[in-house]
Length: 224
Image (cartoon, rainbow, N blue to C red; front, side, top):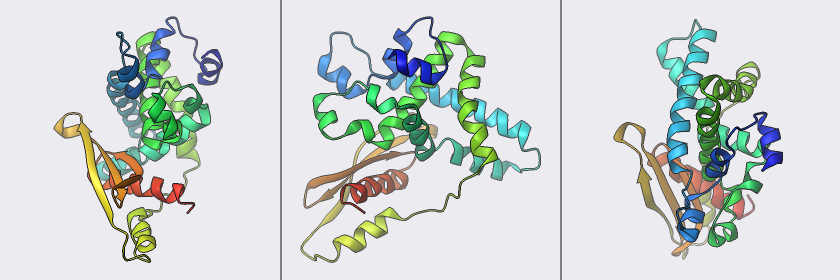
């Protein structure tokens, strides 16, 4: 925990905020006894992140119209980006997961890592206020704007389908396993099944994005 605190570059007055941010719902449900998951922190962190990024790009990209600002913000706060930030911090190794989730390599799952990053933002915000949260967020956002990476869309679903079609007896299906959040800010969870066996899980702001993430995880597990 102390090592992660150093990597975050923020000294907590109340370390329990960070502990809560690292507690996945699977662990909280398994242990119980009043242990709370990081889901509420994730909700708050998502909002803090959106405000900070919106404010920053509004002030630093004065020539971009509203539509382009929205696209830029979406690319900066998407699951893929947040997962990358989490991995850079080594968040996965500090997560509290259930035994089952550990066996499923939950500490490497993009949706879990992205959610944990948002929860960490909220933990800093609650412990130190908006300025500390802003400083933390901009450590990751500013380099992204200065050194933009190509964000070409990859159709993981089509790639996975083409691989599976080589064996006509195999059946592929996407199953919506859950959704949360208000109508204007939904988060969806999807599993991809191969002959009723789960081969990938994903999450996203839309069902399509969640399906793409599930297909991407399946491809990674298959060695593609």
